Image 1 (cartoon, rainbow, N blue to C red):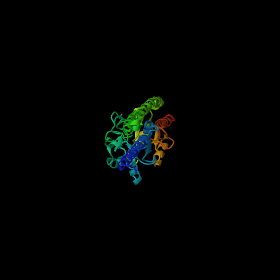
Image 2: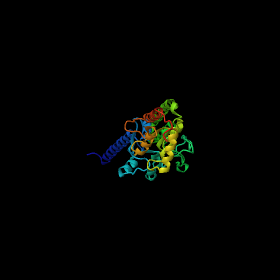
Image 3: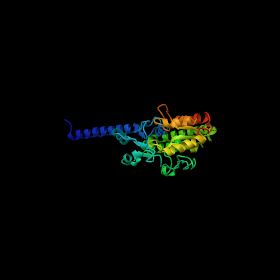
Image 4: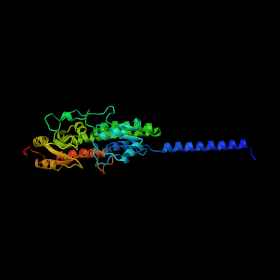
Length: 316
């Protein structure tokens, strides 16, 4: 019979080896696990995907048909927020319904885009004080929260995502940083194309459905006359609609609608004035698979509606 002491030593060594194997296996699994990024809206998800590549999983909280202003979270949404390694959102200035749930998450698991350093902001009341739809009392606290509609801001968001993901998955930090820089370079080329594409229509007046395009409009020097409503949830009053009609009759070329919005009366107004009717989608439909696609589509929508036809100002 063997010595009890020897048996104990052998057992201890085997147990130690087993624990070591389990520990190494656990560390390997952790290292291989991809971070989960949950973006509040599709444009942010598109930016995050450029950074993440195949080294993180990207999901979107809101359906593209939902309003980012007042989305009712479901229990399953709360679980997704808790399970995410990183929640990427604009901020309470856009997704106010997320402020309280995100306040309960660890700060390192949440990245707000609206407060990032170095963002580019359009000047308030950029289109003139005498036009309808420019009430300074209704401006956002610091500016239009649709910050992704300026490609320079998209580059800033991408770098912030790369930095945060690099902390979550240090082994992929260099990969994320390289992707962010590659994306930034592609944005410079995109920006140049859009500046050239939109230059011929910069002086032509238009109205948008809701005040969510000032980043795009200001950056590309477009001539927005007014908006139909400040947010999609707010119905415009009769006085505002009459003022809108007057300014469009004088110098409007196009009035833009948005997907999933009931805007038949505005479309009828535009047609009665001889205006072109366009469609702007700041979020991106199912066919939009990249941030560049989203911006190219937006630029083409402006170009098509503004370049076609002419309102002579006689339909008053």
